[in-house]
Length: 217
Ligand SMILES: Cc1cc2nc3c(=O)[nH]c(=O)nc-3n(C[C@H](O)[C@H](O)[C@H](O)COP(=O)(O)O)c2cc1C
Image (cartoon, rainbow, N blue to C red; front, side, top):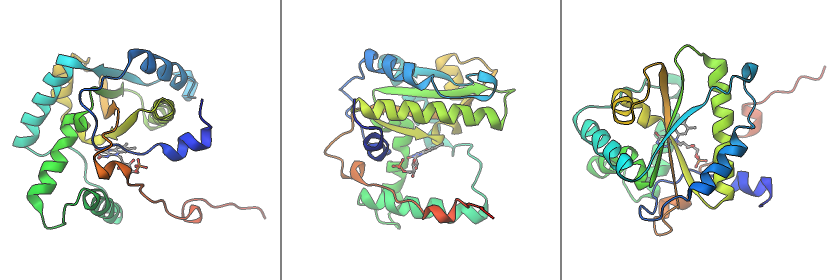
């Protein structure tokens, strides 16, 4: 069992997986058993997950890609004050893939890989009951981070994906997800492709003092 600090530092978003190396079910079961230890409001345990592999994953990807080629995803735009952060991240992520800002075709192709779950053999859908609120989404987030860390500790790569929530009706229809569950995001899980240089980038963080304040008098 690796050290917690090591695992936290090792976790990062993987954007290209080895499609032919399946995720052992035993590892998923072990990671999920740890993730459910996450706290949640009134112990509601609001996380609801659906995973697809094999033919089910391939059908989901085909349907999502078909849709993504026809229309943009329904993802609310970032408020203007935050929009520059997405641009900066895009420059780093696509830059690390060798894609220049003005190369719109290469960028389109790279963005489309979102709906292939970056070729991950295990495609996860993270849902929550539609009647629950922001405080419960916090619980789902805590579960999700614990799951990511547990999977990282097993040598697996992950990517949380709001892009998948951009076509909720496709996801619901393909996987028979009940309408009372809202799709929050996707989760790609698999072994990272070591030959994809962008898998090695580490996205920086702001100074802690920009986000955290201590009052002591
Ligand atoms: C809720 C959420 C949604 C995300 N959606 C996407 C996505 O649709 N596509 C993507 O490539 N990365 C997505 N990410 C990954 C973030 O870009 C990434 O976590 C962030 O840039 C920090 O990088 P790191 O995970 O490598 O540390 C998402 C992350 C979170 C937590």
